[in-house]
Image (tube, rainbow, N blue to C red; front, side, top):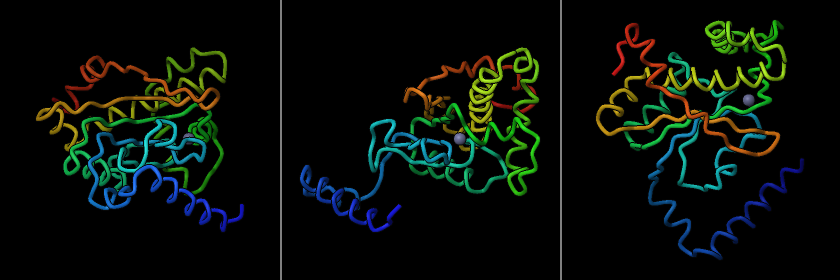
Length: 208
Ligand SMILES: [Zn+2]
């Protein structure tokens, strides 16, 4: 890849934006008021704004390997806190994707060095849902289902945070679990019933 091209693309992008709205960058410079926090995978094929047809100013974005929400990860926790408490987003999305390399790596037993403790969190998702996953004979289907269950568990992790709990109570923040189907381009709402899931864990985590 020629990186000069990146700067040429940037010049073209500026021209295109100004052609539609001469005040585009002045408006951007005034601040942000996104409605949505998007937590997705770092995978180069899963571009947050582009696949939703949104642009600058629309979405607050956090991406990491396999779209994880880990309570001791200062990075994701800071993003969630800032987006929910300060930007006051009304929706938080955890978006996984089929063919996720992080999820695939967690299904195998290879030693991946520094990635091991990160992937262990996905292995924990496998352990929690072992019965369901082991009942799936087809490896591809099992892999897809683990992607979906990982989204579900990361949503639960999100709901357990103090910031989300408070926003749930005070202003009806909504958490969504989505999957991007990389083979078709389709964004799928998993329509996770958090009331049912949270009912089972409420006695342990003291959730609202
Ligand atoms: Zn991924």
